[in-house]
Image (cartoon, rainbow, N blue to C red; front, side):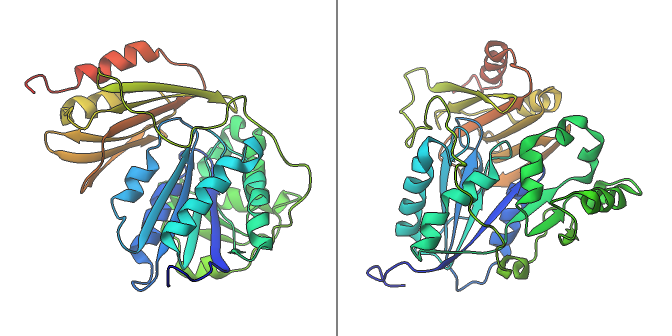
Length: 334
C-alpha cells in the first residue's frame, strides 16, 4: 500500500475475554498463521500502567506486524481519546490489511466497540466479528458470574471461543453450552472449542452484529498516559492502578539490569496474585513469564527493549515487599 493511499475499510476484529483467559496467546497464534503477504496491526490495551503484551507481540513485530499499546485501564475512557490517538497512529504507521484489537480483560468491550463507530462510519474500518474467549472452568466462580464485564464480553460476542479445553474436566464444556443456551443475550451464539488459543483465520472474516447505542461513555479519574516517562536514576519505576474491583502494580527496569532466571521462576511461581505477567532480561536470555489460574508458563523471546512486570489481584498487595523481591532477583556482579 502506497504511503499516499487513503486508509479505507481495514477489516477489524475485537478479541476480548476475561483476565487470564488466553487472549494474548490467541493473538500470537493468529499472527504466526496470518498470510505472509498481509500487513497486520494489533492495538492492545492493558489494565495495568506498565504495558506487557506489546513486548510479547513485539517478539514477532517486523515489516508486516505492527503493535501499539494503550496501558492504564479501559482505552475507550476519557471520551475515547487515548484509543483514537493510538488507533490513528497505528493505522498511519502500519497501513494494515487487518487490525486486531485486544481490550483489557477488566475493561468495557461494549464501549470499546462503540468508540470504533466513528472510524467505521468514516469508512476507515470495516468492523468484523467480535470473538470472546471463555474458560468454562470460571463458571464455578461466582465472582465471574456477578461481573458486569464478564456478561458484556459474552453479550457482544459474534463468536464465543471456549479456550483451554485440554484442561477442562468432563462435562465442563457441556456446562458452558447449557449456561450460554439459557442466557437471554447468549442463546444461539456460535461456540467453538480450542486448545492454547488456536483461533482459525476464517473466524475473523465473519460479519459484526454490533449496533452502537448512545450514552455508553464513562471515564476514569485520570486518563491513561500516551507515552512512557524516562526511568529515574535508580533504574526502575513503579506504577499502580485500581478499578473494576482489582488492583495492579507494575515495574519497568532499565535494560542494563539483568535478572537471575531461577530467582524469577521461584518468585513468580510462589506469587499469590490472580495474575502475573512479565518480560525479563536474564542471564539466560529474554523470557516472558505468564501466570494465570495458578499456572506459570515461560516463553523465550528474541529480544525486548527493557524488563517489565505487572501484578494484578483483587486485593492490594504489599507492593513494597514485592519490589524488594524483584530487586533481590537481580544479578549482583554487574
